Image (cartoon, rainbow, N blue to C red; front, side, top):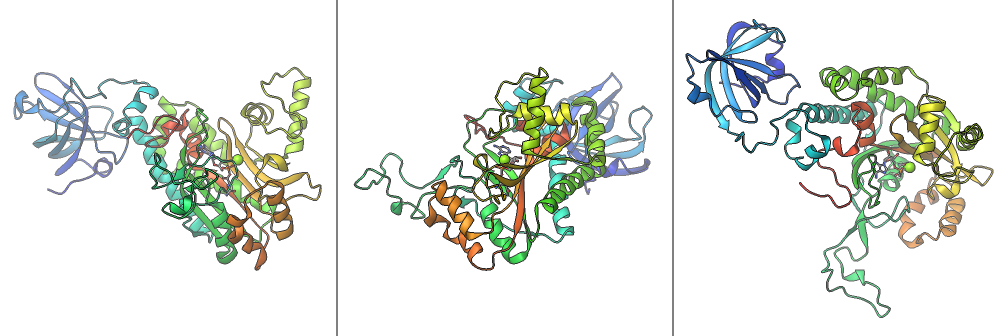
Amino acid sequence: MKRTEIINALQLAGEGQLINVRGWVRSRRGNKNVSFIALNDGSTIKNIQIVVDLANFPEEQLKPVTTGSCISATGHLVASQGSGQAVEIQLTELEVYGTADPEQYPLQKKGLSMEYLRTIAHLRPRTNTFGAVFRIRHNMAMAIHQYFHEHGFFYFHTPIITASDCEGAGQMFQVTTKNLYNLKKDEEGKIDYSDDFFGKQTSLTVSGQLEGELAAMALGKIYTFGPTFRAENSNTPRHLAEFWMIEPEVAFIQKDELMDLEEDFIKYCVRWALEHCKDDLEFLNQFVDKGLIARLESIIKTDFVRLTYTEGINILQEAIKNGKKFEFPCTWGDDLASEHERYLVEEHFNKPVIMSDYPKDIKAFYMKINEDDKTVQGTDVLFPQIGEIIGGSVREESLDKLNAEIERRDIPMKDMWWYLDTRRFGAAPHAGFGLGFERLMLFVTGMQNIRDVIPFPRTPKTAEF
Ligand code: 4AD
Ligand code: MG
């Protein structure tokens, strides 16, 4: 018999029709006469109740039906007599696909800690919380593609293996097929990469931006959406070594339009979650973060504050004057620490902030330099609970200025020739940003740790599964 997904079965009127559902048993309870199975198949956070008349199914046959086991259940869909569900299935035929020994199956108890669940990341999608998170993750990916498609952007695939360090922060994982115990070296003792697979030193990309810029100089409006890798040894609830980034790049726009795009895009994604993930958000709102739905609803109605870095520093220094204590210094020129960002966003404004015009020395080489020659047109979005969710900028389109910056920073020129060609042939003003997908997921789900919004997190010293 054809399977009905539980999300669809729960929509049907219970008129006694015969249906078949398949899924994993969440619980079984009952008495001498009747047994109730709560079955979930992942299509929705909701379980369907299967009622077993023990007169027809001897206890022996039901024995393998324990929490975690997988079954196929056929029966009549009827209006439920109990409260809590509109319909239920009266079992007529049972097949057990796979048992789950109650002595060994780890997901028996409720209220297991997030830390423990990370150690069983292969099973945690079967919990309510992670089922909700991963369904929302899918929906957010759809929202992103939909937004850009609707707005005339083209999805452009940038390479994962690269020979250039876009952010220049030296946080790259090397890619090699060489025998690390027997490396070929030149006279000076340096590794001879001509011997390696690509004939040069290569790494996993930290950002698709540089190639994205090439594409924007041809297709006008593009975006990337793919995995990026950073070997930064920061064990925080906001950093992963492997994360997904969305990077739109747009020709012919300026700073204000870039900030408009950042704000409009995030609001669209949050609105999408509220419209498409209602059941999962209600669950998370009840069990993970009581303020979640209210916060999502308020964000889409709020105008983000637009603030220059210099104005931000002034506010922070004013706060220090009035007795506020920070761990890290914040004088003009310092990179803001997350405590500073959170003070501005959570305490001072209580709204998302788009901060712009940073000192050039704390930002990457490609950002457009302002007239003052001190600041660049970076436009980061800072969010409550999260801190930096978007990093963006207008790009320097002048070949001379870009070259001067590359020289000042001692960036190896010969590897950048192709990037500089965009400034040589038909250079155009352009701008773009990168949104960390898991940072967006943190905001939309109310989860506290970035390790819990990606199926298999990669962080320092952990690469299990
Ligand atoms: O600010 P970042 O480093 O900017 C870039 O990579 C630019 N090339 C983007 C562009 O303009 N096209 O990173 C962008 C965003 C951050 O704002 C943050 O949300 C996320 O990527 N991010 C991380 N997310 C998780 N773990 C990490 N280690 C992250 N590093 C950055
Ligand atoms: Mg950044």
